[in-house]
Image (cartoon, rainbow over all chains, first blue to last red; front, top):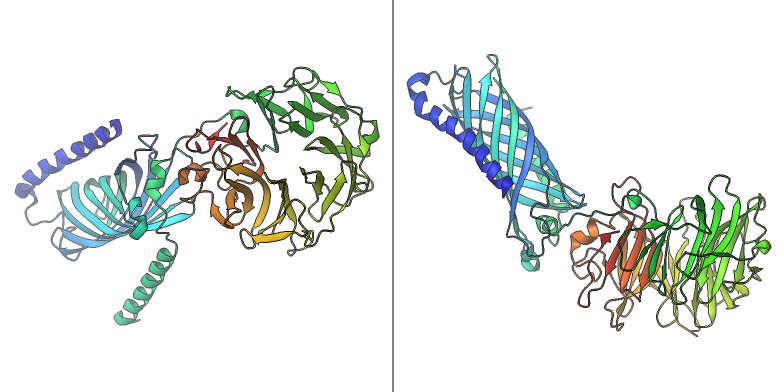
Length: 203
Length: 389
């Protein structure tokens, strides 16, 4: 419960300034689109690294002996986005993440996803909210499954130069592990929170 | 390269990636459900990253024993493992250990921890409080001959010695209290005895290459029963070796081999039968364990080494094998209960205590950051699953 509350608090902290910026930006941003970096035809490559916080797995297992069988892990990703319209970008992401378990194992996840992002901001600050959807290769103790993968959230960045920005991101990962037939009882829904730093390269 | 070609290459790469990913999946394995049932294993520091090489029990004084370089014990009711001083000496090396649960007797072959000089074979009938030395002059232990191991086979204590100059092995026997004598037919062996048992009135010994039958405790010969298991002693990359020997509740003798075959000789049977437990998988030590304390059905726990170590469960009644983390496995109620404990560690010994309804499993856990000794107790309705000692 403490971990969930902390995650919600972190989400709130990042959401409040974002919503304030959305409300105020129309006056200052004009049609500049962040110096043209968020205009149609622009592109972004980003590298992220951060913590993967396991929140909860649904449905709960009555025989579970630990509320938090997964420890805080790490994630890293490579992302590409192309602005198909002013402020609206599509692209893809390759991610790797791992968490250790209370039993000493390591859960490894490698989501491959399509990306949709909305960008805005006024120099030197830029913001994004978006969603990734794709497939997630999950491995544990030599066994593996491929699951659907959805993550949604956003980030705030400081422009360091014409091309580079650096900032932080907060994303909620939703991982439905779906099995079929006689194994349907193994269906579970994993929820994680990604808190990461990101370096953006605009071109 | 035109746009169309690039698209084709990208599509082909995506298809290959998808095939590889799908091929690595197992619909019957629930990753998150497995994680949910995990429990933290917090065992004795003594056994972390260690190797336990032998196990034993004293049902009279209600103690378990685990052997590393020294012998450690705990009471049935307790949880703390303590060093067992042998004949008043704590700084020793346990070359061998044997126990008779029913009579409450233990034996330790003790060496000097620094010089490896032979201290003696000591026995205790009070759980290790007091000791007496067995007369061991027949062993000839000294600079040329060392004591390698002890075996308890039903009613007889055996000692294996090793002549370093001749590179041979010899077996000696005792009733457990009297002096040792050489076993006829078991001196000057080319390979060491790795296991012994007693089934009915017969004594059995085994090297990696050969099974030996003792019609009495003092006289053995190479087993000539039809279909007797043999190993070829791996000299290059080919061949197979015998792995473990045990007797079951019906006094059948069971032998495993490194090609995945389990050999069985029923009491008084004319020939050995064989069954493939795991094709081309190296099998090791084994023990018969009742699936409940009602003793109406049994499974064999058989150490194995294929892509991973650990054990498998063998149902001799149906000639079926299940993995230790299979959903139908008896001794680990949850898949994670096996995968987070025994999985991927070589099994060196398995011991079932009928008095306590507990299984002890000894492992080589070096560099695994986990433990070398786990127990599993039957509650009356189900097995508890493996818990670090």
